[in-house]
Image (cartoon, rainbow, N blue to C red; front, top):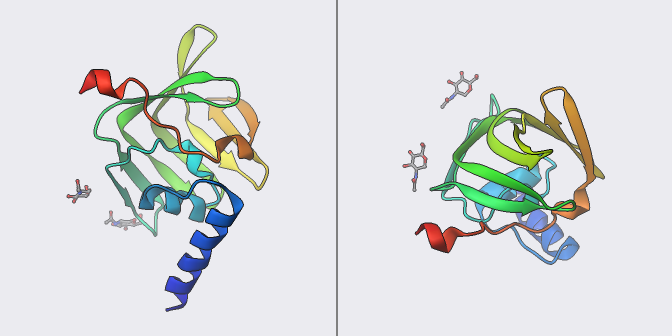
Length: 146
Ligand SMILES: *[C@@H]1O[C@H](CO)[C@@H](O)[C@H](O)[C@H]1NC(C)=O
Ligand SMILES: *[C@@H]1O[C@H](CO)[C@@H](O)[C@H](O)[C@H]1NC(C)=O
C-alpha cells in the first residue's frame, strides 16, 4: 500500500514538475533512479530490470535515431540497450552511440545528480544540465523503416 502511494505521489510530482508524463513503465523506473525521462526514446517495447543487481535491458523493437539536446548530437539506440543502474549512475552501458567529431562514440555510462547529467565516453566525459532532458524524444525516420 505504501509502495502504491509513493508511486502515485511520484506520478503526481512528475506531472506537476514537467509538461510530459512518462510514456512507459521503463521511463518511470528511470526517474526512480534519479534520471530524467528524456534519456529514453518513447518507443520502449519492453524492459527488464534485476532489482538486486541493477542489470537492465531495454527493448526498442528496432534501432532508433534521435537528436539529443542541447547541442543536437545525433544519437542511435540499438534494438536492445543494456547496462547496470544504481541510484544516480548507469554503468556498463551498451547500445547508445553518439555522432560527434566525425565519428560514432559509444556512451559507456551516465551519471546524474539533481542538476546535471554526465555522459561518459570511455575516459572522456561531457556534462549537460538535466533539464534539457525533460521530454522523451521520438525516434526519427521510423516511418521510412517500417
Ligand atoms: C519482455 O521481456 C521478457 C524478458 O526477456 C520476456 O519474457 C517477455 O516475453 C517480453 N515481453 C514482451 C511483450 O516482449
Ligand atoms: C539478479 O541479480 C542477482 C545478483 O547478481 C542474481 O543472483 C540473480 O540471479 C539475478 N536474477 C535474475 C532473474 O537474473
